Amino acid sequence: MAAIGDVARLAGVSKATASRALSGNGYVAEETRRRVESAAAEIGYIVSPDAASLVTGRTKNVGVVIPFVNRWFFGEVLEGIERSLLGAGYDLTLYNLSGSGRDRARVFEFFLARKRVDAVIAVGVDLAGHEVSALDRREKPLVCLGGTGGTAARLSIDDRAVGQLATEHLLHLGHTRIAHLAGSGASGQPDTVQGLRRQGFLDAMDAAGHAPSPADVVETEMTMPGGYRAALQLLGHPGPRPTAVFAASDEVAFGALRAAERLGIAVPRELSVVGVDGHEYAEMFDLTTVEQYPGEQGRSAVGVVLRLLGEGADADPLPDSGAPMPTRLVVRASSTAAPR
Image (cartoon, rainbow, N blue to C red):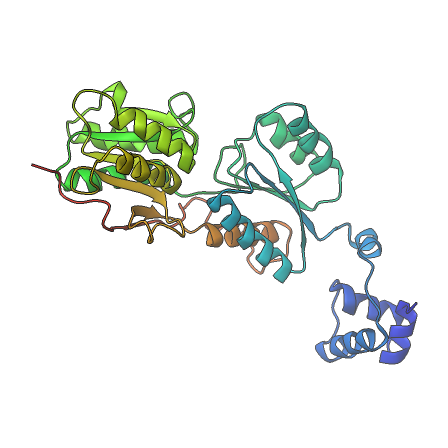
């Protein structure tokens, strides 16, 4: 088995220089680095990550906490994170964290805090204070992408503004009876994604003088089946029917479109529908939506992690942490002027 000494002899350098060249820690002239890397490749030498971590105190591994792996938004974020980490020479350990309980406690108290990760990215997770503290005590940098948590390193879109924008689009088209298919727990958790989007909807409706009735806000899981069930409840209810629906996600909006089809309600002539996310199927469904860019968000989160770990060139580790991430209203055929 090839050893670092074999690499050093072949490259004509000391073992210390060969080690620095292959680990990336410490200065080595570029020509020397290439010579050492060529020698290592020639004899099949591979740097031991365990040995490197003993020297540097780094594992080159980032823990990612995510509530769902089978939903489009989270899958796109995860792909952006993974590609960026691999490009930077880091590995990824994934923790699928849903709900609360003993398993969640073990993730924060043991797996993330004590096992070998250099930093943590939490995607769409509402973190408790003691969970943040468990990482902080062990000096594990934490970056939150969406969700809530007591950390300065937080990246997100402005979900309240997104709710306002989607609702104002429908108001501009002349709709006054607008319903909102909100995410589960929106009314009781105002600081969450679903709570902020609901509040943006209410802000826009109040500003236009069209305060919705309680029946016009229906909470549901932010999935296609959830949207389908909630829209059947909303649109099948006797009495005046809304002429427009703002759905808290594109998947909820897809479910609403299917429910309208089943009930014989023509979209957009009788019902306009707007979603949020920019789902890959939004164009196929001709859905008007407020686009966000989850893959880019994942890449940005990795950029912040690397700066917090001292891997970036910027002195300020969080130059853009206060600015919301970009969104864009994309108008398609699912929304039109209110029926007369």
